[in-house]
Image (cartoon, rainbow, N blue to C red; front, side, top):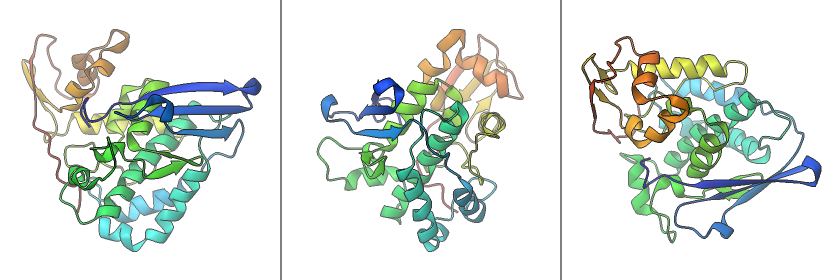
Length: 270
């Protein structure tokens, strides 16, 4: 999840008057020309995330803690939802919010799937030590699922698509890496119609959580997210302090002394 562990690039090529879109994504340490691609039709039905919503309501607490054994018990329904995601990548005809909701849900759902594949584990980082793939040393770089028929990874979704294409730092409040110091996993799916409200709610919840940020006027100890992704927070004339103050009940001074809290990688399990 830090800059060394999680980085990727994306290139998009629109073909044949927009009828097909091919997206190439490169995981860290891999030959760029060997990066996975997926091809989607310019028009397709928008994915319904209702099945994921039901599972989240059933197996995720209000505090964002996950009943992984419960997901395991409902594995058939969960895998059916993942199969639907895999076969129906966003199309050019989808709205921005429809695409963002798809990719955020995909990241969170496939993160749960990755944990289930190796459960029980104390931390998602433990999965990295089990990887036997050349040049792949972190769980986020594993190409363990397919989108549009091509193998891809969590890194590809976060860095290659969401950060590159949509340029909205609030995604960092929505993507959940299955760890205690991550943002709270919502016990509902993200949807296009509610996306703005959901992102704002995630931001307020994360910034004002004293286990993740300790904010005072003259001093603040912030989540490592604000350090790891500083470039995102500083785009378009913004700053870490401006983003924090946008949501924090306690406002930081622009001259506040800022430090960063240790990150708790323990699994976000019930």
